[in-house]
Image (cartoon, rainbow, N blue to C red; front, side, top):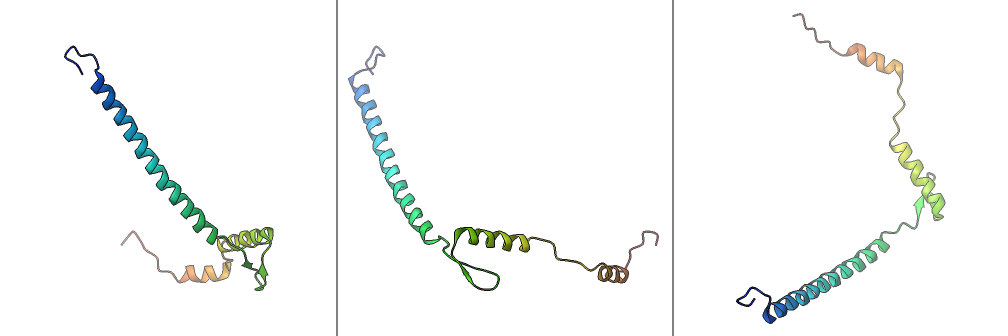
Length: 102
């Protein structure tokens, strides 16, 4: 600034250069993100599922059928296995016990 502390012409020019530089930087950064967005969009299109196999092996191409098959698959995958109570009792009877008294 000037000797009296008031902003001078140099300060005004410096501030203008700073603002222009910042705008240029933001434009360049945005250009890069547009590039990566387009790349990701293209990559995502390649990952689009167009067919699933039914339990009997027949191909499913209808989106509603594919959705139903996927739901059924994961529901059965994460459901508990059936247990035989008699087999569990035999197993538990054979397990050693730990006593606290000895």
